[in-house]
Length: 143
Image 1 (cartoon, one colour):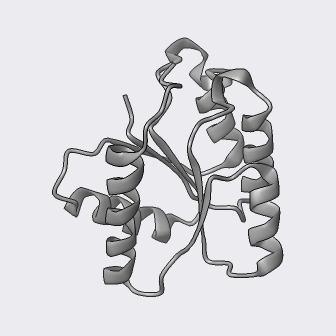
Image 2: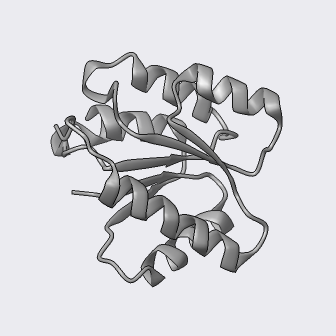
């Protein structure tokens, strides 16, 4: 099972995430997807993931400004499906625009985190997110 699913279309941000998540002193499994449509297929077990429908991740980190199907749309569609309705999804975005934050919550996001500007600060934020969502958050939807 994947602990963290990160949906990010910027290869540099995806690389930074991968390097930092490996530095966390805990065995965290993760998968990076680079499009909203692939994330939706993965979470619903459809399309290219139909033959490998797996348990849901413990946390989805979602960039909102994705090309094609946006992160907002992925969240809305995920919330409309019984299997993924209560899946923890955290917006992880460079935008601190109040309209984006409001729209994300309206779409059904659980939390909104603005990506820090530095490598070290991003590592600290990821550590805190993993501590809370993977260790302290109680869930009932591990399907």
